[in-house]
Length: 502
Image (cartoon, rainbow, N blue to C red; front, top):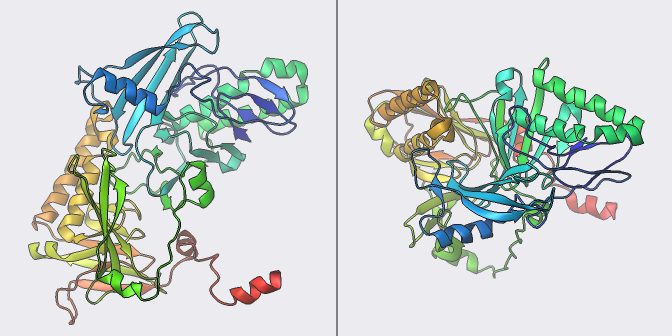
């Protein structure tokens, strides 16, 4: 079962497609548009800006806001009296009369810049709302897997971009990428939107094809039963652009019901997002040694203001460890600076778990190499940071803890209208305890768990053993090998196997 957007949809025997429906469902924050049906093959398309009066391209919105003067993207807040939406006269695709599109350019933490658009028609009362990401595509895709076990889980806030795929495996239900517009809603709102789209043209189907209509009625009832959560089910959002988000109500603590996985996009996903693959330029063998003594520079765009910037890259040898690649970007326009570390070697045969007992303020000066595949845990705070959350970093222990503190303080659900006193109080208490660890007032343990074995924590007693530092090697589980892409990797006999296959 696949769910589409505000596009023409055809119905075949035993299959159905759901659109957003004629209006927002309970708990949903998005409107919708009309949907037509036709028996035969199915066509799932994206409602583009040229077909929908309530839609406008990101470029057009930026130009409209820029003409008005002032900052394009301002933080969303009720106290900002100058933040007003731009109004544009648009054609209503329901009655073909003039309506009004309102555009609001704003910035949301964890979701960069977005464009919120709302269309309404006074003639026929049709309305439509959507969001468009105006920020950059992230370096990695993201997949959120949530096990829904209670009614509270249905109220989790969800940011779903138009290129994200939503699935419920238990019902074989899927909302394909680019079949709906971006939306800020809840899990219940996504289900209500699908139900409304399926129910919209049921009277016509019952008159033309009773068998298909009955099957759709059965599936609608299954979707409605999910909202009651009589039994647990799995909700998955897979976004190659990395801009979707599912709320963790227990932040900054780990949510056992929510699994966040960052992954490298496939060539097909990159092409779907309009990204072109970079051609690999072969260098002569004798150039490898020169790269170790040279700082390479290439052009890129600033992740904050999108202005042209330069990224410097250097191969560095870490004592008592291995080679790493350090990349640093400095923006002359806005002053933003960022750095990232990539492992220069292969995946180790075993995973590495590094445990440090923090007993002295001098421990804050220890060097740390945290790879993209490394997770961080502080048992005393019941805190766990999943792999890929902060990317690769080469810093000190103090720098890593400050990055964690900044990440927690920028949680979008503790700022502005989304915050609640109890949740804000919990995060403030967590930040206070973390600050005490940074200042050396409280003893704690820091655990780095890297299945790839490419993370490092400085031993200040090297080459002697460090009494406060314990390094363990362990065999990776099947799931960890799957995340690293090792289960399907064949390193022996692949040439003979390929020849026999041909």
